Length: 179
Image (cartoon, rainbow, N blue to C red; front, side, top):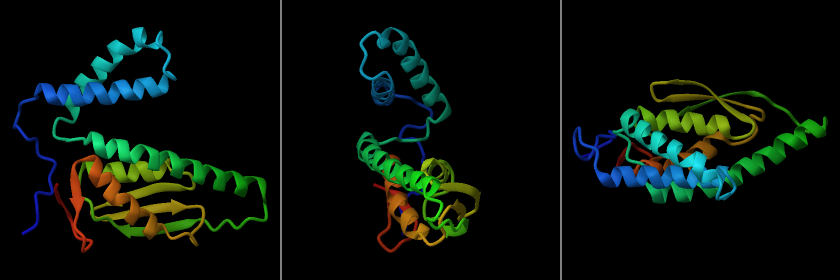
């Protein structure tokens, strides 16, 4: 029997102090990175960290972000962004480099909702790709190079997105279950 593929809250209708602490820590780290570690930035950042934490708990109370998943995802995303940016820059500076734009359709394994939307948004943030459409379990990706294996890229990304939400994709390529 498949695991729970929804992002249901652990405690229906109740936000605990652990949820607050996780969000505060996540937004504090995010602010620290954005401010370059400048101590003076905390005077401005602290109220916004609290507001962002409160808003995220109100708007996405059902989402269970995993700090471990986030910490594993960020270096991967930074590396992929750098590699993609170098590739796009080379294509722009070397007119002879191949440019084969087109659309690729991929069947998504993540559960519907926030997980799939997050996948589409991350793909759009990677250089050379843009999520053009997401209907049911199909994601349409615009890419600068149709010769690149976009299916492999999405298959690599899906478990990383699942880990952000404390979900695990089945080994057989099926749906996601709670981990």
